[in-house]
Image (tube, rainbow, N blue to C red; front, side, top):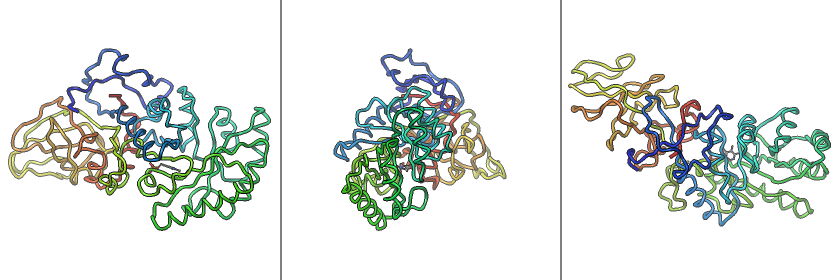
Length: 402
Ligand SMILES: *Cc1c(COP(=O)(O)O)cnc(C)c1O
């Protein structure tokens, strides 16, 4: 997509969620006339059609199983509410999952009504508050008596998912102790077990063992007539590698946002993913250095011959990996230019070459959905994982829908 065709529809502050403008409904038809942005602040773009395409792709891959879309950590950089608003209308999306309580609350504050699974910790009061907002907790400790009290107060059973640790050693009841806990919880009138879940280590051989631990646990409980709701385990990684782990629901994050979590998945022909995010900024300064002149702290770059440099207003405080200056390139007017010197808090310096090919105000793309500039390409050039690249985008950067 050429930048000139881009219509700026909305600027959505990602953290001031209460004031976030509605992305839903702001389609190209209903939005106010496209405003040409002239700010020199960098911005994150959100490509809703690509997001919807990815959900369709995942749905096809998992033969129509429901998708619990993980949108934690500020919606993988796009804004947790933006992501939720785009996903909520899609029938394939059975619910949303986040890790932090404040994000779950932000979704309810924003009017999101589909199920929200909170995969992070809460204290007793927070748990009650979350349940009151219809947030589904993930539990793995003996919280039964507390749930009795909460359920009595609402006169309604508490819906929850139980997290089982089959070997990741992070959170979850250890699988050997899981059966008694699940029986204890499921046996209470105050509890409605809607799901049982686990997380893979993503070590292919051990994943098989983990899945075996999980399915034999679930089989045993179901054999005894326990209602476990939906069993789910598959993150993006398993979508590619483990059809046997699709179970009753899948739980991807990165794939929903159109980014391949592993380079080897890109040409595997399993899923056609299209990135839903872009990071762009405008050139703020163009100058020529003479041979021997330098740019950046510690004179990190020294011109060998006369050379044109462009300065961009994006730095590590915006989430740009510091190693972007060790091989990553930005695209300006269709050409790729290397980031040089060092990435400072708020600036990037780009080497344009012997001729002045760019001007102040030109749009520069760090990454978007174009081959060669995809987040996977940019991340690899910075030796940063795509998780770091997307989730570290400063939440205060404006988010714009395209
Ligand atoms: C982040 C996360 C996911 C999604 O992982 P992706 O690799 O982004 O698909 C799934 N489950 C849990 C528990 C997570 O924390």
